[in-house]
Image (cartoon, rainbow, N blue to C red; front, top):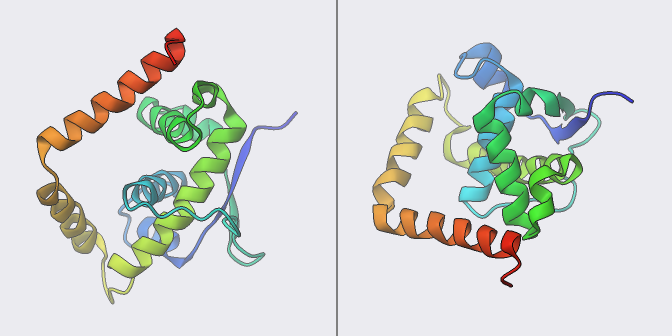
Length: 159
């Protein structure tokens, strides 16, 4: 059996961020960034999230799982999306969820910083800073605690 691949929509912005401006080193890093962006903005594409023949690409799930932070993100996104603790260790769910949220994140990225004529790095940094300023630390900690509590309750069978 081959290595599990995430089939996703790869637009021009991927190439700009990796090849042209070297904001990221690998396409799978952009994929995870866009998945988080899609989740953060509540923009997930449930249909046509793998792109067309011209825009479709693949990334090895092993690349994401080889980095602890990315592996954790993939597991948490899958859990958040499904509400099922099994999704934390289900590679098929993780592949689907990453691709769906990344497609939504790509849409957001095109709108927020994909139209820049030059290097999009400043636009990305400005976007991230604006989101940090919008957030209240207590709100983030509360949301994270709710996620942990929900996970603990389900794992311990309290629900």
